[in-house]
Image (cartoon, rainbow, N blue to C red; front, side):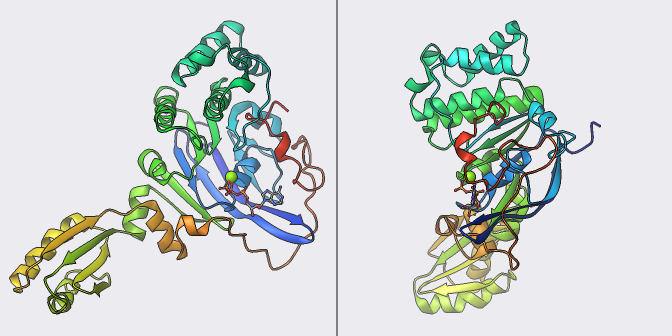
Length: 364
Ligand SMILES: Nc1ncnc2c1ncn2[C@@H]1O[C@H](COP(=O)(O)OP(=O)(O)OP(=O)(O)O)[C@@H](O)[C@H]1O
Ligand SMILES: [Mg+2]
């Protein structure tokens, strides 16, 4: 059905047991993504982003919960899901001795693409991801950033309607990052591809994603456009400087009369955080002028997604890294395999599966 969400996750939860300790990597992940959306998944190290992607791409079975991806059930129809998605994992796969172009052609063949179409597609991707100078080199001769671009080309080879990218731009130089984003945006424009990606580059998510999901300790704690998140949860930081502390002190009630946000004084400055800073700043200066208080300096700094995270969690994303998710109150046994045609890695714990994960998640 055309209007059916392309991703529909319901209560996805993943628990690992490591040395008798239970770690809940993802808790009750419930959301939908419409066709053609570009969603960025943000969160500190260990938040559960990759685990979420790996469940949605059928690489690991959830401990509980369900999801439909491109209209197919991730547990009962995992092969169908895999055929219809692209996936570029966080870790590069590594040690191919094939040449770059041949690697792309093999990927096309794997997905059953006719060879002429595969050659055209490979050349298009080589061009747009700037792989031309290395197209005849073997994969192991590429630099980390070049290999990453190849990973992404591999994930896109069969032109899937939905692609999952786990930190696609990490390790790329600024020029390559910009090119990669251009390619992602072109994909959406030309083919309506749905893109679900994780990134640690907040400014990328802010600028390009139309929807940002923020994850912390295994849970989604915010889900909206970057603009709404920033306006609702952070706001512009306005700072007004005065000639003396006394002036600043007298300014506080005047400024407070214009906003319901808290107004603070620090030495000869007054600051507040407000969603509509562009309008409020000149209005504040006028009101202070009218009250006989001269503003010496005025600045308005727009919020970042890091400010949003700070408001939500009391930590910045940088401080939050590597925080272990809270263990659940009741511990369950060791994770066991999924059923049906579920992931082949699913026996016992998942600790060994990461090493075998290929960039596309299906060529294993
Ligand atoms: N195979 C595993 N066995 C045990 N614990 C795991 C396993 N994979 C992930 N975890 C734990 O689950 C939590 C979430 O990990 P995940 O890789 O999903 O985080 P992430 O948000 O992708 O982080 P990063 O930004 O560092 O990539 C972490 O505490 C991690 O240590
Ligand atoms: Mg990750």
